[in-house]
Amino acid sequence: MQVANAPPGLQACSFDIEFFHRTCPVAPNHKSWLVVQGTKSDFYIDHTHPFGVSSASSNVGMIGNTIVDIWVAEGIGPIAKYEDDFSVYQTPVRDGVFVKGAFCYTYDKDEAASRISSLGVPWHKEKGDPCFLSVHVYIGFLWNLANHTISLPLEECLKFAEHVCLFILLYKCKKCPLHEVDKIHGSLCHIAFIYIESHSHLPSLSNFAASFKGDEHILHFTPRSMISDLKWWFDAIADRPAFVHSLLPIGPLQDLGIYMDASTFWGIEILIAGQWAAFRLLDGWKIPGWDICWLKSLAIKFTFYFLEAMQYSHINLLIHSDSQGAIRAFEKGRCSNWHINLALCCFFPILACTSIHSSFTYIESSSNPTDSISWGILPYADLKIDKRITLPDELAPLVHYV
Image 1: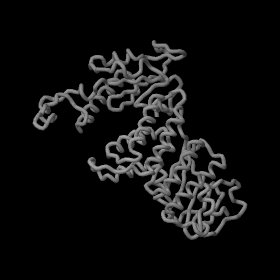
Image 2 (image 1 turned 30 degrees about the vertical axis):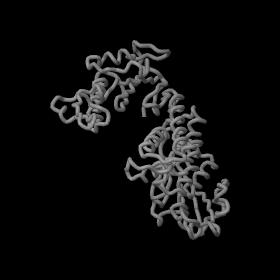
Image 3 (image 1 turned 90 degrees about the vertical axis):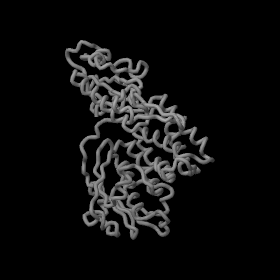
Image 4 (image 1 turned 90 degrees about the horizontal axis):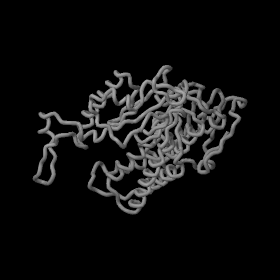
């Protein structure tokens, strides 16, 4: 929200605590419970919180929250915190003593640090920003406060692309351990916040990880679907290192009367602001995996094709559907059903190009105004949407645009 609603002149500075977990002391009466095993017969008492102890993050988190509370009480902030990473913001004021360009501020980095110097926080000398900036790096992302955007720094793009490429080279034709799958999956989930259309290219990784059933000692061959998705990820990261994701506020939710429905008996139907479109299923459309949930997901996909053709953009729309399964898939951006996931692959690029934001709501079939169309009862012809859409090649022989 700080970036989305950033006023002119808003700046931020990142602070990083050096060896946060290892400099967080342990209470003397707790030390006997923090024992580290070296060799089979050697045990050591740990005097600070090591990485991997489940209580460590909670305890150092409380220390981090205390730092934030004291900072705010000293007039510094607002502040974002993740573990040992802090992003301190400053807003221009009329009579500030620190001048940068056309704006005045009440503190700079040294002044902000001095207000909590009595805490003795061991700030990292190399990590973090040298001063307050309008474009800064925080938790691995590049935040542009003036443009209200987020992107990956070039070095992060190269790092993630290298990780993906190395995984493909190592495990394309050989068995893979679970911890390697978890590592690459976790990395890509992190940057999926920027590459919105990437959500539909994650299920193959999570499905493969689930096939291990938590056993870290077995090996499995990497499925072709996962290798294909990793190649997509590599192309997305390597070909678009300057890709940015807008964080501008999406505006109020608007209900334009967007409904859709589908039936295996007749076909797909769509209603947008009182105008309709329908697709009749042709003989031979039914194959394994193409069920009613897939049809209703296809109806949502076709709806966004029409929204793009009708030149809707930069708008926050309410979408009504009577399929809870399709709604869940589109809200998550992914689905374990391979066929529905393919529909999602075409859905997110439209959102990225048009800046359409969608919120889905469930509606009972009996209240769905497109329910009658799904049985072939068509409304007046003069209310038909006057835009045509181009269907994917694999669907063109299976449905007829009425």
